[in-house]
Image 1 (tube, rainbow, N blue to C red):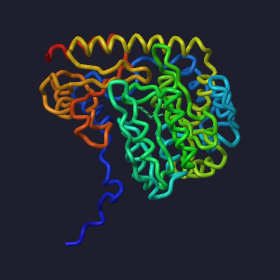
Image 2 (cartoon, helix red, strand yellow):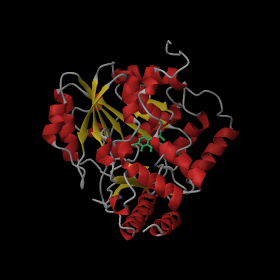
Image 3 (cartoon, rainbow, N blue to C red):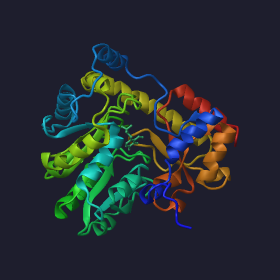
Length: 389
Ligand SMILES: Cc1ncc(COP(=O)(O)O)c(C=O)c1O
C-alpha cells in the first residue's frame, strides 16, 4: 500500500517536539514547580507593563512596519551604542522579530543555503538543531567541556572547512551558564575571517551575568561587525517572555536575506509591545544593577538547594539563569527517567541533559535547573527534592 499523503513532511518528522515545552506541559499536569522552562515567576517591571497598556490604549494595534517600529529600532541602536559602543543604522541594520526564536530561524533561512555547514557549540539551546534542519544546513558540533565549559581550539579549527558558512554562538550560554571570554571570541572571530564565515550570536542573556563576568558581543571584535548577526530580545532582560519581541542586527548585506524571510514568516512582531520596548531599552543603569543582584541571589539559593540535595555542579554559572547538575546519585535511571520521576513524584520539573547535546549519552547524567524564579519558589523546590533523598 502506498504511504498516505496525510502525514507530516520529512523535514518536520526529522525533529522531535521540544523537550523543554513538553516538560512544562507535564509540570502543569502534575502541579509541579517548573524549574524546566526559562520563564520568570515574578512580575515584569511596572514601567514597561504600563508602557504596553498605554500603547494599546493609544491604538498601536495594527501591523507595524515589517522591520520594526522605527522609534523602537532607534532605541535598540541607542542601547547598543551606550552599552557596547556599536554603531548600528536603525534604518537598514535591524530587524525586529517575534522573539530571538524567530530572529534565529529567519537569520539561518536568510543567509544559509541548503548543504551549508554550520558550527554549533554543545551543549546547545535546543532550538538550534531544528533551526538548522529547517534551513537545510549540516551541523558540526564542538564540545564545551565541563567544569568550565571551554572548547578545544584545535577541534574548532578542524570543524571549519570550505563548506562552513556560519558558526552559532550563545553567550551567556544556555544551558551551561558559560560566558565566552574575549580571548575565546577572538579565536572564533579569527576563524570566521579566515574562512569568510558568519557569526550568528544569540545574546539573549547579555545583561544577566555574575561575579563581575562581562558580556562581550563578538560584533565588537575587529573585522566582525560586517560578518556578525547579533540576536537578542526583550524576553529575558525585562521578564516578558510571552511578548514575543526580539531582534536581529546585521550589516545591510546580510539584512537583505533576513528581512524578507521575516516578512513572509510573520509580517511583524506585536506592535504595542514594540512600543513598550522603547521604555524598556531606556531604563536606567540601576535597573540592570538591581536585576543582576536579584539573579545572583537566586543563583546562590539554587546552588545551595542543589548542594543540600546531593546534586553535583561542576562550576557556578557566570551568566544566564540555568545550571546543569549531575543527577546520578539519585539512582533513578538516565536523565529522562529521572526528570520524569522528579516531575511526577517530587513535583519539580527540570529538563533532561540529553536535550542539549547531539549524542544523548553525553547528557544522560545531567539535569538542567532554571532559577529565574522567586527565592520562595526555589526554596519550596528544594523542600520537595529533599523528600526524595
Ligand atoms: C539561548 C536562548 N535563545 C533564545 C531563547 C528564546 O528566546 P525568545 O523568547 O526571545 O524567543 C531562549 C529561551 O529560553 C534561549 O535560552
